[in-house]
Image 1 (cartoon, rainbow, N blue to C red):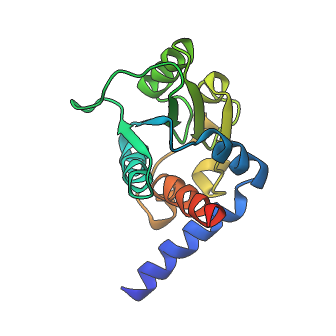
Image 2 (image 1 turned 60 degrees about the horizontal axis):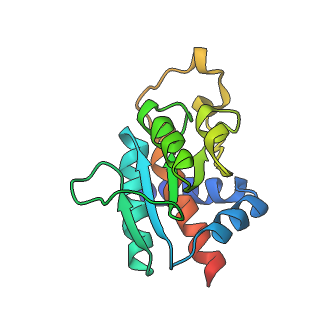
Amino acid sequence: MVEVLQDIMQEIEDVIDKVKDEELQAVMAELDKSRRVFVAGEGRSGFSARGFAMRLMHIGYTVYFVGETITPAMQAGDVFIGVSGSGKSASVVNDAKKAKDAGLTVIAVTSKPESPLAEAAKTVLVCFCGCFVCALPASQQKRPYSKRNSHKSTLVKGIFTALRRKKE
């Protein structure tokens, strides 16, 4: 069990080490506790994004996960954070475009800086974990179940850890 936890911690550290400080600073500049934050993601990225939203709430942000029944309508001045490893998740990209059109600040968290999600965003935080899946062109990506394919789970966890460290 300890070995598994050490592997997880190493993956998180690997993600954090690859985050560019200037991108992280740009995200932090957009996050203000007086602004509402809306977070969106699909699949495993969405699951991690939900945890990220919860952690933001714990440190004092007003945050909602897009698609929940209690999520209010987004308004100009709010912040939208779209999380997608591929940057192509249809609902996340569509929500990001709608948020941008409505006057929200859009932040993309992705491993693909030239993706549709990144194109819709004002600020992009690239989280390239360096695993074999991310290193392959999209046409060659296969998703076997292995400990090295847990990068989507570590994507947002690593970013939150970095955000928390930078704020302290």
